[in-house]
Length: 265
Image 1 (spheres, rainbow, N blue to C red):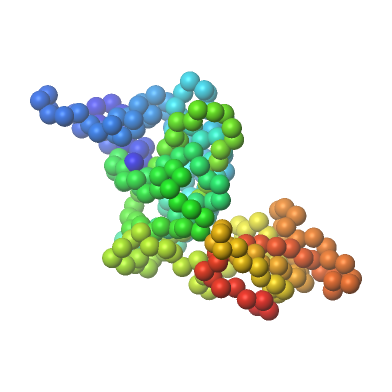
Image 2: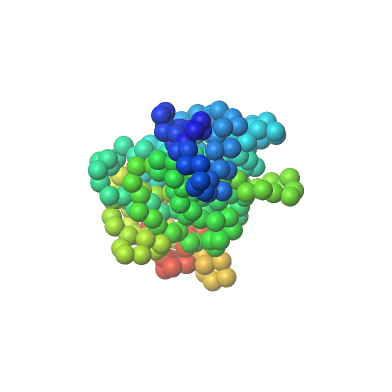
């Protein structure tokens, strides 16, 4: 997760090897990949950090493969009504190509409808099986040059499904066991803060008024009093009355393990 079908990365000249006559055929997963890529030409789209798209743009009878190129060390992928496959090419321009990288993937809440593989030179390694991870889990893997192959799983209904995840590439080692949690609670570097300001749904300045913990969801709800509202894409923060001190108020969520306390800015 090479007769005539190209490899998953879309690299010219990399073809599936033909097995000797008496030998076994390619594994089922590779056959599936060959069918997907041989049945339709890949579509290409580009962005800097994040991508959002829909499988409804594909014709129903075609199993298309769409290619996405991301140039940041962190971002979000959201794929509504997943069909066929999506190849996410990670080409961060903040790291040296020779540096060892660790890739962490955190599925978004309610994410379903696809398996996620690590793709390198046409070979696939299963990272996240559809429905396996719960809220707050973010497994990490050793990452070299390559990308993610997101394969839509067969569905019996036409209800709305979205496969979504946050990704983060870091230069630190993840230790002997690469399937460990990332460090979502660590302080952000200056570069990460700048990236967040440019790409986040909202940018505010304020303080934490209260925190309520939800152990069942492994989340903490943070109630914020905002003195400066620089930008918001949705109505997370609403104007507060004079009796509440003015400004804006809103609620956001974070992982329970972060141990957030009131009073912090």
